[in-house]
Image 1 (cartoon, helix red, strand yellow):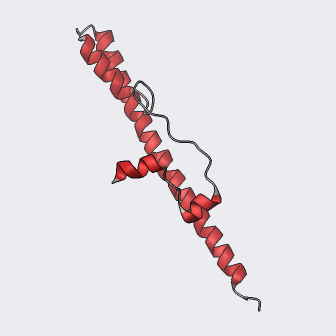
Image 2 (cartoon, rainbow, N blue to C red):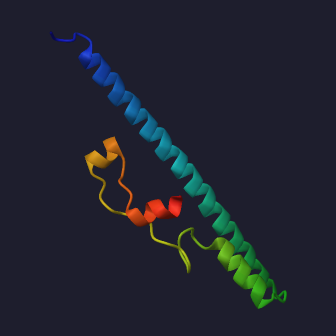
Image 3 (cartoon, rainbow, N blue to C red):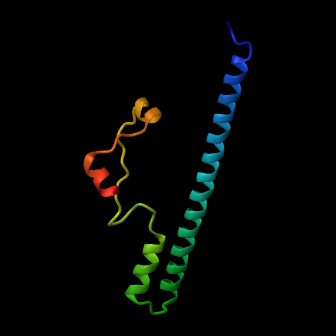
Length: 105
């Protein structure tokens, strides 16, 4: 028995998915733009202080450089897990190793 509303359900699901994806991308872009402007502002202030000849301690310069550093760069950051995700893991969940289960208990 064919379902007469199946194409409409698929179209609305696809449209909703695309809309949410675009909204997510817009939010990420807005956050990246704000982070970029903050970094530029910090570095411009540091350059202005250095040009004016005001004595600045090395600790202050290091602190400002660390504030302006791009998120994810530098020392001590772990790389994200980029293992391929299979459909069975999406539907049934990822199986944990025996060692991981012992840590969680």
